[in-house]
View (cartoon, one colour):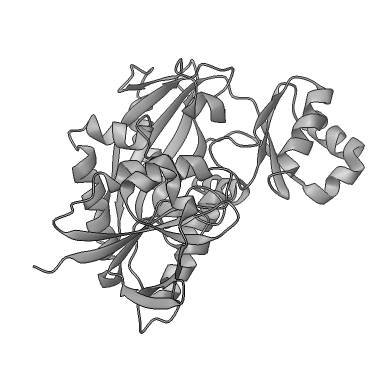
Amino acid sequence: MKKKTIAVLFGGQSSEHVVSCMSAANIVAQIDRNKYELLLIGITEEGRWLKADSPEDIQNGSWKESRIEAAILPDATKKSVLIKDGDSWQEISVDVAFPVLHGLYGEDGTIQGLLELAQIPYVGCGVLASAVSMDKLYTKIIVDALGIRQAAYEPVFRGQLSEMDQVVERVESRFSYPVFIKPSNAGSSKGVTKAENREALIAGLEEAARHDRKILVEEAIVGREVECAVFGGGAEPVAASGVGEILAAADFYDFDSKYYNAESKTVTDPELPGNASEIISKNAAAIFKAVDGYGLARVDFFVKQDGEVVFNEINTMPGFTAISMYPILWEARGIDKKTLVNRLIDHGLSRGKQ
């Protein structure tokens, strides 16, 4: 049987570039090489597209020294990647793409739009789901319509910060401290701060504005941080995993706590008050369907001491590193990483047939 060609895209221009490379290295190691030929395409932080020679190139970072350029052709009749090596050009037909890209210019619908133009099947959520899930403000608008409890929020736009006193007055008239400040479009907690007072609020708004023009100020929810993995969509029923809990080393689960602090731990199937676990799984699936999700997502919640469940955010291309919760949650359900990755690829291949 002729092998299919899978284009794995990684890196990217977002603040989650390093995490994407870590995720891609783990995913590539699980792809069935009897079924697929690998075409590895790394995107530098500056936005250059380069062909990587081997999975080892991703792990050691040497792919960034490649002189071989790569580009997805938007021509739907070709369904190909154009490879440029010096003065030599080659078109490689692609059967499916796996955009292992987190954050802006990867998880936000942009790459998905390019793949739709090229009519190349791909793993994961489509343009709409990717865009609205990446944008925390619009996710909240959708979740409000579902009637699912989430943190109260106040939107702030970068242009409004020139009148900082008015912004601060608006926030303080609505919330007591502490509050969380988040860029609307950023992942892995990049640019997220916790403010205990006015001075910290101003600093947090300025920090968030460096990451996005839209900012959310949210009420602080005191509770346990938990996550739920979702798979399915299209003809495949949406399935939600069990619950995983984050035991963060820091005051809150920031970027460094997620990826660089060995004291942060993850626990599967924690004991939660009341029927919180069932509510989390139900709400995770409902939110995934509401954003028109396809393939995979990780949905994050808080569980308060009294058992109340509060939605936090949804990630449509969750991390796939050695410590990431998405694959860990499915492993706890008896689905190992290799099986999971290849199911995701099969599901991506079937998207055009549903």
